[in-house]
Amino acid sequence: MSHSQIPEWEESRFPLYAADRIQSLYGSSNRPMHAIDEELTVLIAIAGGEGMLKVGDKSYELTEGSAVLLPPRSRAALIASRPRRLHAYKLAIAAMDPPRGASSAALTRSSEALSGSSVLFFPREPAIVACLEELYIHRSPENEARHVRNQIAFHQVVLRLLERQPSGHEANEQPSMERSIAYMENHYQEKITRERLAEIAGVSRSHYSILFKQRTGFSPNEYLSRLRVNRAKELLLNGSGTLREIAQKVGYKDEFYLSRRFKQQTGAPPSGFDPGSIRRVAVWLSPYASHLQLLGLEPAVLVSDSAEYVNADGLRPPEAMKFVGAGRPLEEAKSVMRDNGVDLIIAAGDHLSHVGLNPGRLREVAPVADVSWMEMGWKEHLRQIARLVGRSDRAERWLAEFEREESAARERMRRTAVAGETVTILVVKPDQLLVYGARNVGYVMYYALGLRPPAGIRREMERHGERFHSLPIELSRLGEFAGDRILAIVFPDARGSVAHSESVFHSSYWDELPAVQRHQTHFLEVDDWIPYNPISIRLQLRRAVALFAGDQ
Image 1 (cartoon, rainbow, N blue to C red):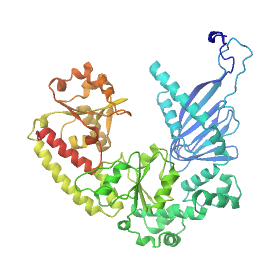
Image 2: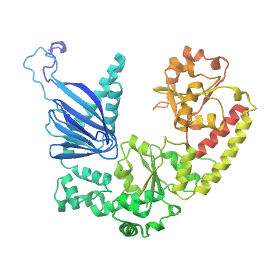
Image 3: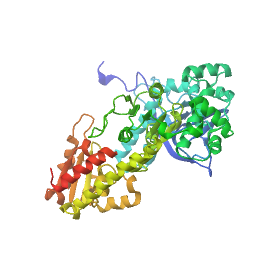
Image 4: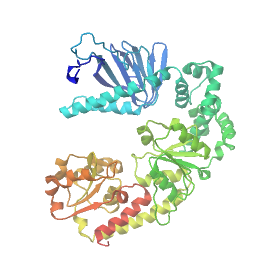
């Protein structure tokens, strides 16, 4: 029989999936609960905050990155945890029979993703959250290409659900241990009983303690004490209240009980806790490793996508730092930090959230200092990190010296042609065209040297200050942001190729720019101009002076 004679769907008939509708749900003090009552299968994905999903007599603790698949005709309540705002996406999914083929005897297979009658809980699925966010943002596609991208994103969700079916069933049964640990990490400040933890885990009280010790290396009480004492250290580092207030915030009735637990764990009372004594620091964002090095403190552990660090005159490269790839399992990173005696973890909460984590997942190892990456500029990064490790004087001396260098550079720029020009920083990525603002090389050009940005960039900088990173644009809008002089930076693709930039630099939009016609364009190297930390900024400042003052 030839291929053309095989009836369509004869051997097997798989269902077709369709996204029925998607909603964005917010839970707050004004509306703490959303009732869910759907005929279809429903996927709930948590984009932010914390809460609980109650289905019948079962409860599921939800944190950012969690996902829950509810079978058809489920009645549930999505409840926000006070005082944290909860943001969730709700996607209703339908499974339909494939079109009829030539064979009426063909059998339709039931949907593996949607045919179950049990609730499936997935503790950490940031990829599902990201897809649902994309579907919600583009729920009214403006063209067919966007519609097809929506279909791809939706089927990526279905594929992930199919691939997670075994682990999903485990999440209802065995991974309840993980849910109980997550419950402790998120509710350490409340009264927590072993009975409640065992109930979440679905095991007996005595068996729970054995399983917990096997999983974490600690008894439940030891683990809870570590969470509370390390949170107390975070509050002490931030100067957040009296000892009594701190004790009550972390779950102890008074400062005396906190002091007893604190001394048991650290060997000293909380009153003797000194940031200057911190020596073993783990960094969960590679630029912060450079901040520490500048302060004369080598990171003990770096968790990052790469082990690259800044090499510069007067800055010794790390000698004993342990590197853990960001893609490695969380327990591996925590084990390396414990083995290396880490007594502080410096991370950025916005970065942790992006990779599906939160400080609570790390707090058992050591206190977690949240130094936001996007909410402040590099100088404040340095000041905050210096304060955390008791080296503020050293940071201020370095910054004062740098600001004198900035001032001299600005004065020098006033005597060059660039002083009266508008300067555009154009960044070409494999899938995106950006005009940079106040960060990275933008800090050096617009703040350090005082050069003029394009009007649209200036407005964004006035609104957002150093939080304004960049503005994505279409190639057709290039002329709106093109200044008298253009600095172009091309990011290579995963294979190291920059061929994608040809669509920009060989286009009529580029050729028609006055800066291009006057040969007022400069092509800058990614590695020299993009890093955003004190040492790199200082090097960029010197390169910029050489570029514009003709010292090359």
